[in-house]
Length: 281
Image 1 (cartoon, rainbow, N blue to C red):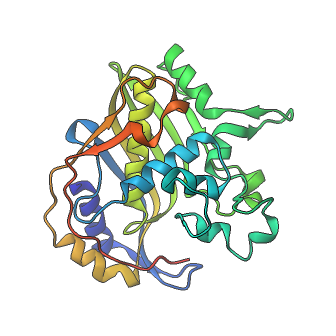
Image 2 (cartoon, one colour; image 1 turned 90 degrees about the vertical axis):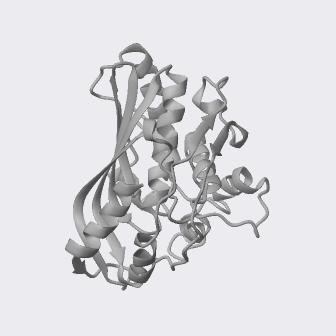
């Protein structure tokens, strides 16, 4: 994960300090690229523990096309009981959003809904993920292998506008790569999660299209470190990374909708202790 650690160091040394809606200033740079080759290992953070189970459960929830935060709890914890929280619980309970929610746990037309049920101009729905997978199989060199979560006409129908807002696939020499664009990037807390999530998605799509996963590339537009994370970032930069782990997917799964938590394993994952930090909301 030297690429990620170098990015942290670059922002600390070259970023611009600026205010934002949270009231906690950030140090930021614009349009920062990160590249990770899958042949090097799975890009899970090793200088602190990555909550990989949360990464996998959220991605499966996106793939389901769900807007139900309680469904995410069910995938993650095996129960919908209210005491079992998720990374989306605070968004579901946000005072500005609750009056808009259609049911308890509803998050509106967030990521997975846009991926699987984008509303078309004729009143129908577009399953972007299914369509793209079929196009990769039939026309792998298509330059329109794009999925968008950023839907300007429905931002007010989302508990949280998408941060990772668009991604595109690329095929060459029977290998599949994925490039994602993210508008707002919490480098210490959020970006390690995003790296792992899109690397996992790349591997899953590669498996169901009979391609080899190659590279995941993130373009981090507003790439920032909150001022109250500076000490944690310095601590992380002082740690020596471990070798990257290996991702194991159940090889029998050939349908993107058939993956479960039991089909996704991270092997030989070594990591330093967690580093706690408060999330700015």
